[in-house]
Image (cartoon, rainbow over all chains, first blue to last red; front, side, top):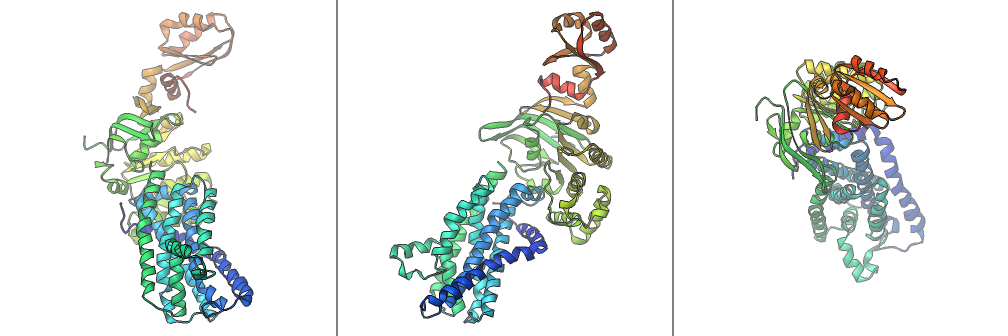
Length: 253
Length: 308
C-alpha cells in the first residue's frame, strides 16, 4: 500500500467540484428521505400502533438518518466515482502527479464518507426541527456517520473496481443496498423476525448504524452501542484493501 | 547508464493477461531532444510511455527515467514529469484557472507560487481571456493547449505527449506544434507518440518506428528516409499488371520497391531517370506520380502496410 497525506488532495479535488454543484446535488438526496418521513411517518404511521413505546414517526425518523447516509455514500462511490474514473479520466490525470493510485482510491472513499456525514447530518437537523430529537447524545451521530460512510464507500469502490459498465451498478443497489434499506431495522424492529434473521442482521453494516443512531437520538445509551461501533470498525478493516487491489488491477494492468 | 540520458530502457517488456504489448525494446532519450514513437494503433507506443510515466507496471527489463528506477521511485519521477494524455482528462466542471491551480496542488506547489505560475501558463497557452471559463465550454484546440499548460505546472524536465494533436483541426494542430517548438527551445525534453507522419517529421529530432511491440528502426526522420527509401518515390498503377516488366526495366536505378494493392512504389534517388524509362514503355497507367519520399514510405517499406 502506498498511502500518504496526499489522499486528502483527492478529497479536496472532489470537494472543490462539489462546492460548485452542491445546490442541485443536495436537493435530490435530501428530498427523498423527507418524502419517506411524510408518507410513512405521518401518513402510514397514523394507522400503526406504538413501537417500543413511541410513535411510528419517532421510530422511523432516526432510521432515515442512517439510510440517507448510506444512499448518499453508496451512490457517490459507484456512479460518481465511475464517471470520474471511466469517462472523465480524473484518476489518470491525478496519478500522473506524485499522487499514487492508492491515494486516489482512499481520497475517493474519504469524500464518500463526507457525503454520509453531510446528508445524514442534514436529516438530523430536520428531525431536530420537527422536535423528534430526544437527547443531546444525538451530537455523537456525525461520528457514527463517519463509520457508516467509510463502510459504504469501501463497498461502493469495490463495485467500481469490478463493474464492466455503469449500468451494472443496478445489481449492487438491487441486491445489496435496497435489501439493507428494507431489512436493517430502519422501518421496523427486527425482534418480530425469526431468530436466524436477527442473527444474520449482525452481518449487515446498516443494521449497526441504525442500532447506533436511534438510541443516540432517543437518549437510550448502553454499552451495547460500543459493540455496534466495534462491528463497524471491523467491517472497515476487512473492506479496506479490496478496493485498492481491484482498482490497481483495473487501471494499471 | 550514462547519466545524461533522460530515459533509458533495456529489454523492456509489458504483458497484459498473456498478451505481450511490448516485446523487449531498448532505447535512450537524450536531454533537450524531441523523441518520437511512431507506429500504427496497437504498436505498443502508448503502453511504452505509460511505463515511462509510471502508470503501468513494467513486466520485465529495466527502465530508468531522469536517473530514477520506475519500479522503486515513481514519486520522484512523477514530480519531475509532465504528461499530456491522448484523451482529455481535465476537470470539466472547473474553470481554466481552477484546473491549473488544483493541479499545482497535487505537486505541493505553494499557493502564492502556484498563482504566479498559472498566470505564466495562461499566457503561454494563449488562454488568458478564458481563465474564468469552465472547461466544458472550450474548443478542442483550447482544451489541448490547457492540457499542455497543466502538464507544465511543475516545470517538468521531461514532457510526455500521447498523440498530442489527434482530433484537432489543422490550424489548432499547427498552434500546438508551435507551442511544442517553444518548449524545445526552452530546453524541455519531449517524448511524443504519434501516428501522424507529418507530425513526427515536423517535431522529432529522433524517432523509433514501432510495430507489434518491437522497434523496427531508429534515427532522425531525414536519416530514416534516406537509408530506406532514398529521395523520391514513383507511384505507378499499371492497368494490365505489367509490374514484372517494369521492375526488370528499372532494376538498376531503384533502391527498393513495394506493391500495395494495384499500386507499385519505386524508391529511388533518381526519379527523373525512372520516369523517362517507364514512359518509354508506352503502357497505360491509371495513376503515375513522382514525389519526394517521406517517413510514410519508410513505414510502408518496413511494415509492408500503411498506418491506420
